Image (cartoon, rainbow, N blue to C red):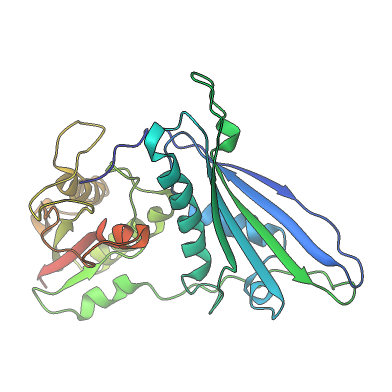
Length: 288
């Protein structure tokens, strides 16, 4: 079962850059603002923003780098969930930096702040944010940082052609907005790759399998907030199915099914990262 969150997702980025001088400390702050009740941040937007300012992998792997992440929430924001939202926003950004994309980078300080002394009926949306503070000691004027070219990694989908009938594969990168069958923007490349593989392997047949997180019982499906029905694992699988059919794949080659919480990758779900792993779509080879 997924937590009901408002369907409109809003993200704005503010970046304040101070030019470093010799033997001074860099102190840059980035803030991402949210619509009420939101936790997730578009990973592509994060990466592009950091790269545009010269913050690439080599920068974050420097020996003197220091990161601080602070999550915030304002008074009227879903009332008693304020603290959970602030902690969740902090945890989401911490996971982005500690997920391995920057090596063994660790966030030094993790904190959250909830607005106090609330006045009934007055909202402060500027408090719905997560803040990243970047610190690093520098000895001399640094040379201009040129972002390293992005190297395209092999897709895990390429393994499908070597799989046996009955084997399944998680569609890495195919993520959904909480409580919705709508995919996040970065999922477009995964859907494109799956379509390419189906076109170049005309005898390949698959079952698309939808899964959800956060249920109290294995057979308890999530609510699709766009339809109001508790069949979210089915509608997520159907979304992928419809995409392939609309792009010319023979319907006899594809089936789809929702599995609710009967096949979790992580149990129990302790963190937001655990929930994201279970909120997924897999493909099973049914014919070759």
